[in-house]
Image 1: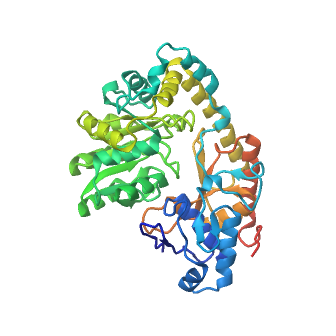
Image 2: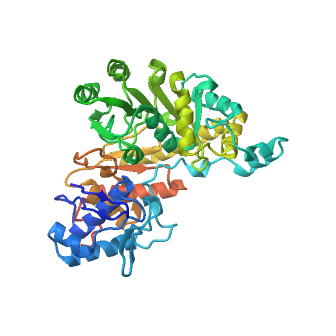
Image 3: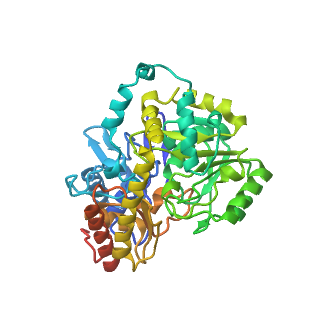
Length: 468
C-alpha cells in the first residue's frame, strides 16, 4: 500500500510497495520508487523519508535501506544532500542506468514518436521567416488560437476522423495540457471521473492537481467495460469519462464498437462528459469510429500533433462542443494564456504543406519495422500491440512480477515501464510491462533491448543478472 502525504514543504511520507517475488528488498524499494515517480505520485524535489524512518516503517534493517538509497542515487532516481536528506532527482526519462553512458542505455520506458524520422525544423523556420507578417507571431493572440491556426487544427482533426468547424477548435500546448483543459470544463474539485483501471499516468497527475477522484474500471482487449462504468455511475455522481479508444496506453486495447455505443448511452443517461484522448489513432490498426462522432454534444476530442509528428512541438488540437467554447477559452487563459504562436505556426505550416502527413507515413513504416523485429524476437511470448504501434504490452510469466522484471532489465541497461505506473487506486499491478519500441533512436538499439527482454523471460527471476 502506498502512503504519500504532501505538505506545503513537499515533505513526503512515502512507503514503497514490496510484494513476495519482487526479489531482494533493497531492489524492490528502488523499483517502487521508480514506479511512483513514473506514475506521478512522487515529483522531482520531493524529500524522501530518512533511511532510519523507512527502515523502522518497513521493519527491515537500516543497511537494506541504505543500499536501496545508494542504488537509487546511482540510477539517477534520487539525490542525497548532506545535512538535508534524500530527494527525488528527476523524471524517469533522464535516469542514468547503473552509471552507463547514454549510448549504452536503451530507453524503452518513454512513449516517444520515432524521433529519427522527425521533420526538418530548419526548413520550416526559414519558410516562416520569409513571410511578410512573421513579426505578428511575437504578439499576443486569441486564447484558443488564431483563425488560421484553428483552420489547420480542423484539418488535422479530420485526419482523426473527426469533422469539425474551426470555430469549435481550441489550440492547446500538447495533449497533457489538453487533458487539463478538458477536465476543467467537465469537473470541479471532488467530482468523480471514470477511466480504465490501467491508464495513462499523466491523467492521474492532472486529476491530482485538480483534486478530482479517479475511479478505475476493468478493461480487456475490447476496452473499457460499460457494465463497470454503469456500476460506478449508480454509486457516484460521475462528471467525466476519460478514454483512449484506438490504441490504449498502456495495454494497446481497441474499444469495441458495441462498447463505444454503450458508453455513449451511459454518458447521456447519467449526463457526464467524454474526454476522448485518441493519441495513437494514426498508428492504430482499424481504429473505431470516434465517440466524438457519436456524441458530439458532450465529447471533448484531443488530437495530438506532438505524439504524431514531433514531441518538441507542444501542440494538440481539441474539438469542443459549441456549448463549451467560451469555457474552453477561459480554461486556456487560466493555464497558459495562449499557446506560443510560433510553435503553432510550425505545426500549421507542416499540416498545410503536407509535411505532417509524410512524417506520419514514415513513422508508421519505421514503427512497423520495429514491431516486425519484436514479433521475430518475442513471438513465443504473449504480448499485445498494433502492427505500426509505438509500444507493446508484454505479459510476464510467473513467478515474475512487474517490479522485479523492470529492476532486472534496468540492471542490464534497458529501461522499461512497470505496470504499477499505470494503476488507478489500490489494485494489484498485473505481471506486465510496457515497452516503447519507438523510443530508441536506432532499430539496432530496439533489437538489443528486445534481446535482453527475451533473455530475462527465458531465464526467469533468480537466474538473471541479479546482484543480490
